[in-house]
Amino acid sequence: MSLKTVILFGSVRQERRGIGAARFVEAQLQARGHDTDLIDPMQLDLPLLDRMYKEYAAGEAPEVLERLAELYRVADGFIVVSAEYNHGIPSALKNLLDHFLEEYFFRPSGIVSYSAGSFGGVRAAMQLRMTLAEIGMPSISSVFAIPKVQDAFEADGTPKDPAWERRIKKFLDEFEWHERALKAERARGLPY
Image 1 (cartoon, rainbow, N blue to C red):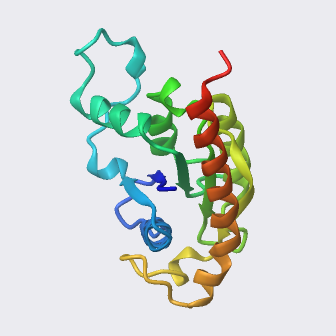
Image 2: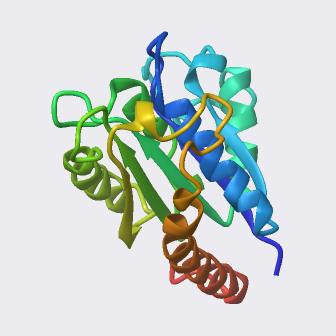
């Protein structure tokens, strides 16, 4: 079963280190046969949330929102890669998420969190879990936390320690199980 996975990355800082983690996740998914798209708000020129995508009249949403909506509608799942800023998620990630709602429904999410310190962004991951459930893409139970992200990956996603490839396996196995299960159920029909 071919899977379409969207990776949502949430940092727009100029010297961001998490982009290497997002690219690592993308490479790991591609190695497993996923069709992937990495969404980077730094490259999108995404407006600050004024109206959700669904609140625009047909054909009047900004072009970037139309492109994302089309992409999200065909996704089987989402991996959300989040930094931890002041024990929370970055505002760029929250803005990226909040533009949409129905496009996420009945699709699983997996949380990859990171920080420069030793906790790996887990405080942000817990806040993100609540948000993802509310917008209709509940997260799997595992979190892939990356402490000291500046020491973990090159900017292109190459791991500085090959053990990262072993560490992510269980997380991706669980995520794929949820993707396959919900894809099959969506094909049978939605519960409303």
